[in-house]
Each structure stands twice: as C-alpha cells, then as structure tokens.
Image (cartoon, rainbow, N blue to C red):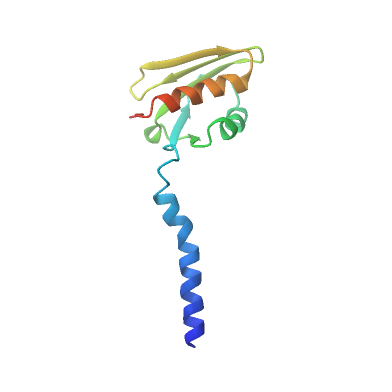
Amino acid sequence: MRKMLIGISMMCLLLSAPAAIAKNPPKDQPKPVKLVLSPASTVPTADILKNLRVKCPNVSITLDSTKSDYMLEAGGWPGNYKFTMFKPGGQAVFATTTHMLSNAVKDVCGFIKTNKSTK
C-alpha cells in the first residue's frame, strides 16, 4: 500500500512539472509574443506560421486581437513581400519589403527581438 502511494505521488509530480515550467519559463528564454493578422493580409497564415516556428519560436499567431502584442499586415507574393507591424492602437512601428517570405518573417522576428516591451 505504501509503495503504491509513493508511486502515485511520484506520477503526480512528474505530470505537474511541465505545467510549472510553462508558468515560469527559464530566464534565458524570450518572452512569448502574440501576433494577430490584419484582415488586409494576403499571405496565408499557414505559410507565415511555418516560417515563424523556424525563425522565432516564441512568436505565435492568435485570432483574438485583444490578446495580441502586435498586428501584422502581410501582403505580397513571391518576389515582392511587404510586411507592416502595428502596435495596439494602430501605430505602424515596422515595415519590410523582401523577395522571399522567409526573409520577411526573419525581419519581423528581428524587430520583435529588439523591441522587448510590446504593450
């Protein structure tokens, strides 16, 4: 009986560890940042998200604009991508034009990394 209780309590500790890490990420990890895509965006969300995961894994896309740190207007086509970032309230704070989608996302990630105060 005693071994069973010890085993159950060990399982509970192991299962709760990921939740504790998620609530208190290590100091060297960048702060999570949420983007909402502008309704005027023409680049598919899946294409942007695929590149975000590689370039800056701390950045995610949300549908709830009230919970976002920035709005991203992603437009263009291969050979001519134009991305603009807006702070809450609508002030444009960053823009880039690139030939490749991956470079546009890389530029957005660079902006986010250098501008840690998002709200």
